[in-house]
Image (cartoon, rainbow, N blue to C red; front, side, top):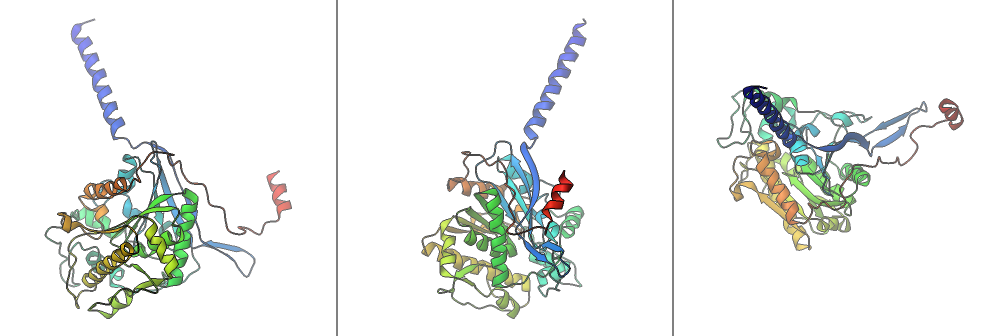
Length: 393
C-alpha cells in the first residue's frame, strides 16, 4: 500500500483517538440520575378523595466516582432549582461543576414553587420589592441600581455576565409561588421538617442555601443535625438566634426591612444544633455599610449581612464553627447576590470545595449511591385491598 495512504490512515486513527480522549475527559460521568418528591401534606377531602401537596422536589445526579457526602442545593426567593443549573450566559452551573469533581448533587424545588407547586394554599400578592417587579429583582440581585422609569444600570465591577441573552435568561428564570409563603415560625418549622425528610432519604450530606432560603437551611439543620454535616449559605436573608439571647438592636432605616429582619428566635436547645456542624456564610460585593432610607434592596442586604455576622459570632461563642466570608475582603470583587452563577463561579466553587476539604468532608469512603425513596407518614390512598389484589392478578 502506498506510504502516503498508510500515513493518512494512521493520522486519521490518531486524530480520532485524540478526539475520543478529549471527549472522555470532558464528559460528566454519572452512575444514575433521577428525581423524587419528599415530605409534604396529605389531606382527605370532604368527598373522600385525597390531596397530596406541599412537598419538595429533588432532582439528583450521582457521580460515577462519588464522594461520601452528597450536596443538596436549595434555591432562594422567586427562584427554583434552575438557579443552580446553567448560568444566565449558558455556562455550567454548580449542577454540572460539582459532579465533575465527584460530588453527587441534589437540586431542590421547595414546596409551593416550580415542580413542587401542588398546594391547596391560596396565593397571596407579595409586598416585598425584591420580587414584585423586574426592577426589584435586578436590584435585589445587586446587578446594579434600577429606578423605575429610568435606565437600569450595572455596577462598574459587576461579575454579572451582561449580554442581551444573559439578561433575557436571568429574568425568565424567575418563578412565582403557587401558594403563599408565610414568614412565620410555624412555616419555617414545617420547611425544616420537610427538608429533614429529604436528608432521611439520602443520608448524611452537605446543604447549600441561597438568600431567603437561608432561614430554611438553619431550620433543616436544627431538625436533622445528625444528617447535615455542613452548611454553605450564600447571602442568607435571615439568621437564627436562641430565644434567651436575642441579638443587639442596631439602626435600620426602613420599617419594612425592620419587620422582615426581626430576629428569628428559636428554642435554645433547638438552636444549639447549629453548633454541631461547620457553617460557611458567603456574601458578595456592593453591599452598603451605612443605613439607606431610599432603597429597600440596599438596606435589606446591609441588615441581613450584619445579622449574619451576629449569628456567626453567637455560634462561635457557643462552641460552634461558623465563618462569614465576605468576598471583597478576600480580594474578590463584583460578585452579585448569586455568586454561584456569576462569571467567576468556578472561583466561587473553589472557595466552597476548599472549605469542605479543610473540614475533612470531601472523602471517598463509603461513596454515596443515591436516595432511598422516603416512606409516607400515613395512608396515601384509602384503598380497598381486596379489589386491589384482583386488579393486580
